[in-house]
Image (cartoon, rainbow, N blue to C red; front, top):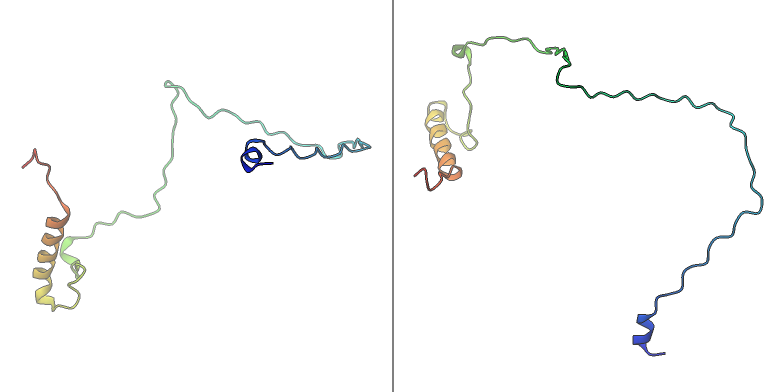
Amino acid sequence: MPITEQLKTPPPPPPSPPAPEVIEIVEEEEEVEETVIESTETDQEEIVEIEVEDDFDDVDVPFAIIEEVPIFSGCEDVTKSEQKECFQKMIFAHINKTVRYPEIAQ
């Protein structure tokens, strides 16, 4: 048989599994408790109250008592007096690199 003819004919289906000879009927020993699922949908007229618990206390921290200023990545090794200047330089470089104004806004 040529190869092209072998490719065109599909392989025969596998034989079906044999049927069991005896079917045993077993009585149900456990009762299954059915769960009733209620709808959670509401209409526009129904009022739904939601309780929100705050897990944190709102504490006002005055700006004047923040002792350490944020340090931009790359400014860790400079002195405290140069950190502000380094921070400004690095943040401006980051903004210039990442922010692109649309043509119409320019």
